[in-house]
Length: 266
Image (cartoon, rainbow, N blue to C red; front, side, top):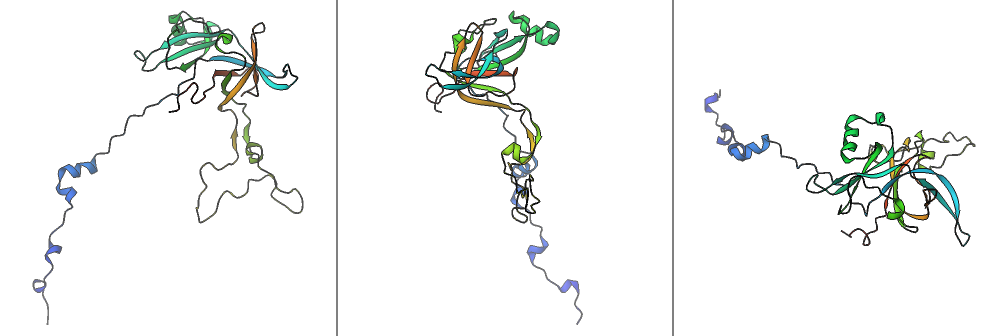
């Protein structure tokens, strides 16, 4: 018996289109069309334990203490500078900081905006400008000279920041102190890196894997170094240990941050 389309019956749910609740409600539907607003990015700078200075690395030597102990020290010298060029306050700039200039240069070595900024404070032309963010900027004023022996004493601990010596592109042995393979007995793996991960699982290389790459030439900080000697006649300071960079490198010396002593625990 032939069956016509009119004799077929379909469920009522198939004949009526169904709409989700989000499409029926205009307020919910608009949430799919509009992207959520991102929070404004705020960049916060860590506070220093106190005002610091800039200096130049001169080299390393051995220092003999009164009891005969030999201490490896780095000699740090000071060129003309370490002058306060600007005092920033919470009312004018949104935070409290002291800007310090270092190393005098000729006028033509600076741009016009840099020259105008220094002339406004009545300061000589200086090559390097750095900020030291402090909890209080009372007692500082433009064109104020900072003397190292008035800020630091022998025996104080300091944090020294600078740019390390650039080594260029290096392999895993030099960059990460990997061990090499056998040089004999048919070994064909001498200084190669080797396996960097499995195949199927995880099927990728983990982030942070130690591999060959650019070595050195980065900004680093060495913490809690002891000031061994302050020589006012030669205008140099001897700091125990090695400091970043080669002779002539710019260094940033600040009081060492010690939790519970000069910075809060939180």
